Length: 251
Image (cartoon, rainbow, N blue to C red):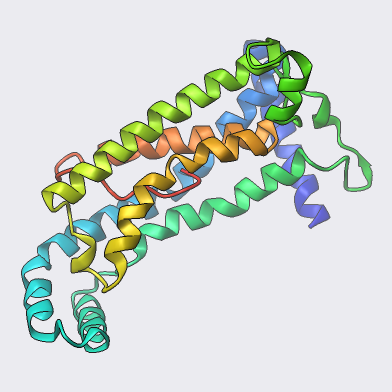
């Protein structure tokens, strides 16, 4: 893990050096935002594939409805029939989870980078870097203790919480409209038991507020940037379908 962390710290440092003429003392924070955008750009082909899969599942709706009518009293047989139909049509039922899952390693790297006092046996110089008055290695509790909710550091979090609230409300609204309109494919039309889960997932977008409050500011920046990217990406990828894709956590 140490060589990986050293390489990651070097990458963040180089991006910060690149951005310093424009961002000055907030260059490392800007580097984190840029790094997040690069990660999201790298997984964008998977997001596009997930969107195509969701649209393909929408086309299977009549066949799925027929299967539910035929095997509705036998959940296990219905599950097998649905999986067989997806395999036959080459439509992965859970492909939409991949973009979110592939981002987790990058998020945890960012978390550990700004939670570790030493990297590769040397002092972690990134810990002293800041976004305006808030340290990138500090948490919301530290900002509250340093000056309260609207203090110099607390105000940085107020802005982040505001961005997350707007993005989460937007994502939740689109997901609810999808369910109300029948969306690209209603959860019950994919795998039995997915309906209740998909109704809870839109609410999970608000869990980002808790994440931002408890992780180091650097990791919070990653989460906020990724969530904002996800919302914009869904608008683009699902612009021709009712509602939008089901939201995922960590963007």
